[in-house]
Length: 354
Image (cartoon, rainbow, N blue to C red; front, top):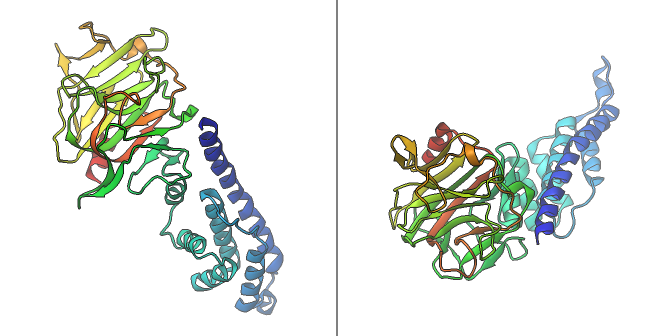
């Protein structure tokens, strides 16, 4: 399963690299098809250009019967590039694509990319239920606004359901066996800086409930990072130092409101750690310093003393800590994003305001 996920994302990246090649080919075609010179008649007519464009689109490698996100996006961008070279109107581009692609669903997605109503992120979510965004350094983007596709590498356990309360759409985890497993990948192995962001609407706050947990071993031996509740139902972040081998706990005194949406962000780098709830930093303090303890002791420590953090080959669990254990989240989740970078307060506030 891990190789499948990694391979699928690499395939998307590789496919998207062909977009630049397609653009270069299209420019070459345009240069050959559009003679230069001072004689206007030598430039041909729009109908000549439309015919050349139609022929060029026909020569693009046809999409397979069930194209993936990268194939659809690459095809659409290639068509868009050709249209720009030949100066073809949007209406004629749509007509040519409609004539070329017989499958209604595939055609709609290609046309959506062309008119800007469908993004690469939309295609990736439709394909796998999640997305990655290299520009924003999102290693796991999980909107949870639609059911996870049946052939997704994400493993759905139990019967979590999509619900809409009129404020947000999210996935409801209301049974002990409800959780998601996202395959381990080097991208989601956060050994240095990281951020976990989500919208949460708990029905009941459960002691030690896992929200996002890296690792599945019942002895926690592969735990990388864990955003969860503590024994008093307060938000807490757990990280394990690579060199020290010690798990450190970043404490808050915040108990999430039940029956209401909260925007939560846990973010860290080599010097600082913050846990925001609705834009407010809630890390607890003792004597003016953050209450970060070595495990469940009262010994205070710092992020810097344990940085970088342990590498983990464990899957990412959404909705509980260890599968099969009772430490589960009870409620609705939406808009989960995991980044391999820390997040500034200004960005936290901007995302909260969305």
